[in-house]
Amino acid sequence: MTRANVREALLIAAVKLFSSNGYNAVSLREIAKAADANVGSLTYHFGSKAVLLREIYQRHTEPMNSRRMELLGEAKRLIDPEERLMAILRAYVIPAFSSSSDHDGGGAEFTRMRAVLSAEGNADAREIIAGAFDSTSHAFMDAIAGCLPGASKADLVWRSQFLLGALYYALINPERVTRLSGGAVDGNDRDQAVVQIVAASFASFRDLSAGMEAKQPQPA
Image 1: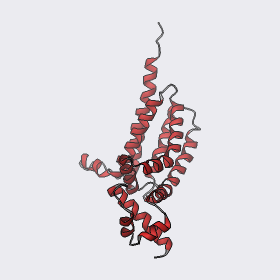
Image 2: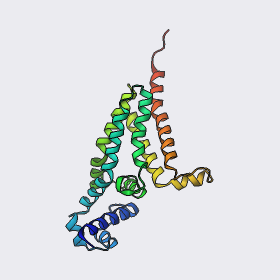
Image 3: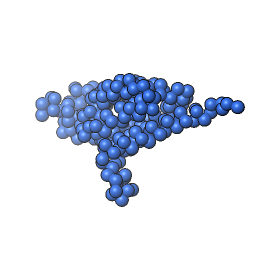
């Protein structure tokens, strides 16, 4: 294999192993073996497991985040706050489903790896995940807050977390939707997954606005 091919093989092998076994349990030797390479090749290309993981996140998330920010810019131009909120949520969800490839953030294997590493709590992984997503996440939370004046930061963060959880699960386990519906619903229908997640998240965030209206003092 050429150096470029070896590098690519190492990245692919690492995603597969991390998504199956987590970050902590996988050694450089195991990654090299799965890529049919030697450990020296891995240290030559990446230097360490943490640098390898950072490269994985960069190559998978940068295109997705770029598309999210592009769609967010379009959504923020809408005047009506409810229409704007719906568009903001679509801007966040659609790029996660629009790819059939792991190479630009939409693949199930990379999403599974993200879920496993998020739960694992490794310090290196936590820093890399934060660097890959926090800036974009803050931009979306700020945009959502602009549609819901008066909503608390705590409520916005919690419901944003629920949105992320829905994305994770819909991407990594669509078969469960098919099974629970007795085949009436195709869990692999990405267009329908986008519609359903956006609708559920819109209702969740819109409920904050309804709650604030209910708290307003009523005229005597």
